[in-house]
Amino acid sequence: MHGPGRAWTIMVRPRSWEHGFGTVRALCPTAEHLVALRAGALSFGAYRAAFEDKLARAMAGDLAPGRLRGVLTETSGHVDNWQPVKDGDTLCCACSRLEASLGRCHRAWCAPALVRNGWRVVLDGVVLPVPAAAP
Image 1 (cartoon, helix red, strand yellow):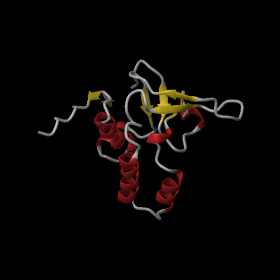
Image 2 (cartoon, rainbow, N blue to C red):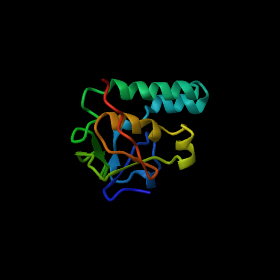
Image 3 (cartoon, rainbow, N blue to C red):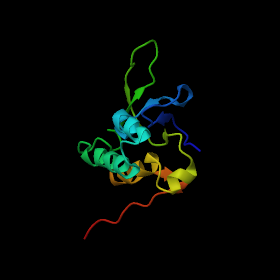
Image 4 (cartoon, rainbow, N blue to C red):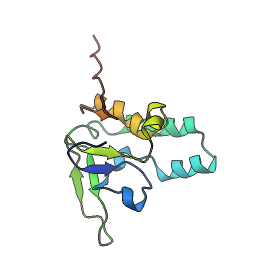
């Protein structure tokens, strides 16, 4: 499933066929945390908490429409440039819909942060609701 725009990866270590248009680094877990998780040195709960902390610490507005950027997939050995993520673009990872629905995919963890920052988010075919403003 993907939107009508470009497909960006949000994986820190995508396989060669998973790069898409480029990488949205602000929405990638850190390589250090992924390695620690896979080695058993970091629990899944701690991995998730560290990633959600990264999203919470993002500079004000960096996740907002017009400000969220991805770096184009590397070609000819160097990074070409940064591009804005646009309405209709898709953020991809290799986790299944089931993993996302069970809360075991960082794509699902990104979605609420993106909604809070002003994006209309469709996660696995479901439009996420915008939270009501506090009174």
